[in-house]
Image (cartoon, rainbow, N blue to C red; front, side, top):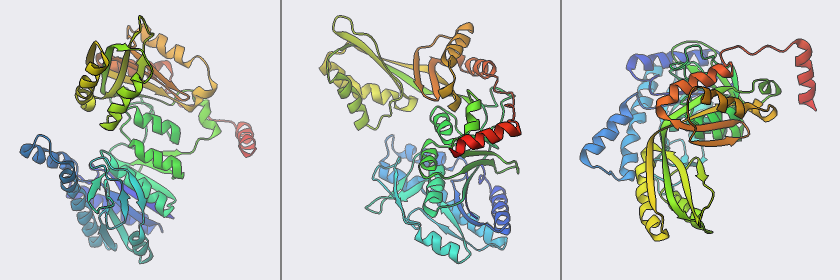
Length: 422
């Protein structure tokens, strides 16, 4: 069995923890598995390096930032390879360049275009454990690129797909995916498994267990991903393809995201091409827009509101200021004290009344909804950020997510198997 194991910054935060990771890798090898290891920088190291750059320049060159922050993972791979060698396991460290992770040319947020992985295959054939630097690759000009926050998850799943691995284990400081944040709801329940679609929605809506792009890779290439803790031996949560039993649960989880801001353009001329100009301009600045609402036109004018990550909000407003003047927009407003609260579940496809239940429960707590966005398996509401924790607890309770779902009888399981085989 070929397993890709990824260890996050907390898991390799000290030399003692790196030794603990080495023991886990050695154990997996002793059980007869081939193992490829992907690691992040030691916890706090990337922020430290970014801080050094900002001590020199308020807006450092992005190419140089990639060269700088990619060094954090290089330290970790060398230390872990040494720790494995000390424990009697043959190991060799590799950078993203050395394993052939080729990306586009977007510095600090590159996307993987190809992985050759030849040196990884050679090492595995020799019985050597490859230890790979996550988060990084190279572009066509051989410049170092990085994959953005959480990019080591993407590296691990992409390597698992390229190598056709049987499993990708993501080790972190939590022991699985929970129905919501246990820090807000202490009786939140750990899920034994979750579908790719649900996990993708939860990751994009604020759940910080897995990086969104890593889930996209897993879903596209059907890589089974297991979220586990590096500090205990619990089974964790398996992220896999949807099965019929998953539809029994209407809602699987509640997520929240306080890293949101709302930009509102007031008095926008309501004519063809205006929305294209607005959002095309933001796209060229690599500003990711999430929820969009346009009001009904009155007197040839309308209002347009949209949400963006809080870190991009002021840049988005400044970017649109000149354009707004050219188009005759009356005003641009920025609201930063908002949060997005969402419910997610594949069971929504086959159950009615879910939205009404969500909206009425928030209304009963006096929580006003500013914006609403839906898909087949999620409903998101933008609310005042001061009500975030109350909203999460309310929705978790009203959908009874702390309860363990009833197990199917043998007769029911047989019926499910027959339906799945058709």
